[in-house]
Image 1 (cartoon, one colour):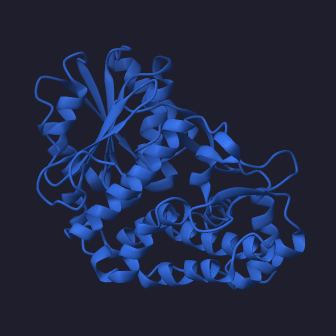
Image 2 (tube, rainbow, N blue to C red):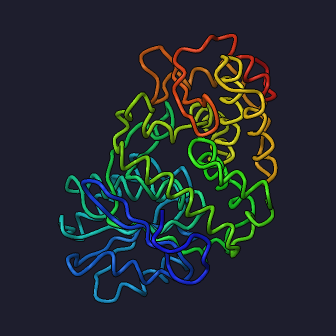
Length: 373
């Protein structure tokens, strides 16, 4: 857990990520100056990746980078940034600017910018340092921590990528006040996920006062952010490259709870459904799938709907044919050959894997979600 008491609204919290390439995640209000501290004196050039709508915030970050040569890499906004053409354009610009292996990348943005900026850093000269400045709740608790980078193809989401741990992550909670409420709500999908897979206190915080979870400057939201980050740190330190945990624990694969259907929903809706919303739907689906398979009790399965609905996350979906979703799930990264694999719960905070579930259960779970199975 963090080295400052969770929920404090004053001092920055530093959360250490151990392993072969250790780094810190800094959480607090007004902490953008930390970016230069993390970068240190070695880099001469810094490429700052951001989408045009975040230009003002990116300039605030750039203003803290006194002494560095700054190259602005403006990416498309959202998932459309995560393509080979965008990566190629960035590589050409890095080459023209003479970026060396000792220079660095800074990402300023949400999950898509973090994924793509991280991928650009991972692939330029086979890897240069990257510092993430996540600007959405979703990016703070998910994309920025753990070293996964990626881009999309026509077959699905994040099918091309690499593991490239950042040199540091700076989560300035002040930027959450600029988020539209639907974006803040969507980010809570990944927070709730962490509650179900590892830290039930997250669920209790939301159940006790869901309104506080939606208040950007509340001590409760800060605690939710820090707890969710702590869950992710604990998982990735033990299993960075998703090879599996000890004693049958799914390891890093646990973080994909709800994601198999979520990625299929995103693709089917051309990413009109936000990632956190899709994860919420995916969790309702997989909880019912586990219940039908005799792995999860009725009460815990039902709790998914109540907690998610309490903060305004969707719990019903019928906007795509099941056959289309099933086809996408079969090329999910967790699949093995033609065998589908789902992260499920055997109980609260007891993740496991359900391999090759009965197709009747797959369809029944989708009907439970509201779709035609």
